Image 1 (cartoon, rainbow, N blue to C red):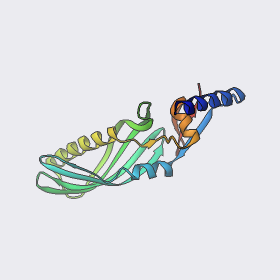
Image 2 (image 1 turned 60 degrees about the horizontal axis):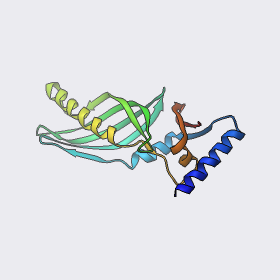
Image 3 (image 1 turned 90 degrees about the vertical axis):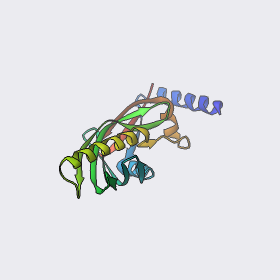
Image 4 (image 1 turned 90 degrees about the horizontal axis):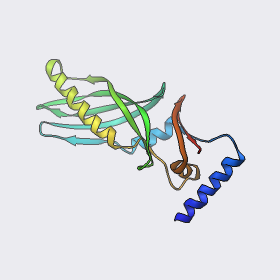
Length: 172
């Protein structure tokens, strides 16, 4: 197994020496959406509430990821349902070989059947549930089985969004 990594590293060094431009991997919005779909539905229960997050819709805009999610459940003996919109930047965690959202914010919460002070409590509960979940699940994991992605796992230089794609640059 270690011989494979050494061989891949040597190939990468050779390719880099022959070609001054960095190797780039582009992950489309559709590919990221498929990865996110695998992480839903998400269910969370607490003493006074139950929540289920479903139907994620991922978009990329202005160097940020946006995820729209539907939710339903109950809180404080009342049924809740609606939609929320979360945004954040992309971060790569080397130890996990995966991309996560960081610095995320809940931009909008639409509750279909709750008003007033109860709405504020439900929104705070949703913020906690979403924060815990988004911090723990990867938006996309680099695959060992794909040559370029395996190189990216070892030689990642930069991650940014460009149009509706996540652009991963490899280099030394």
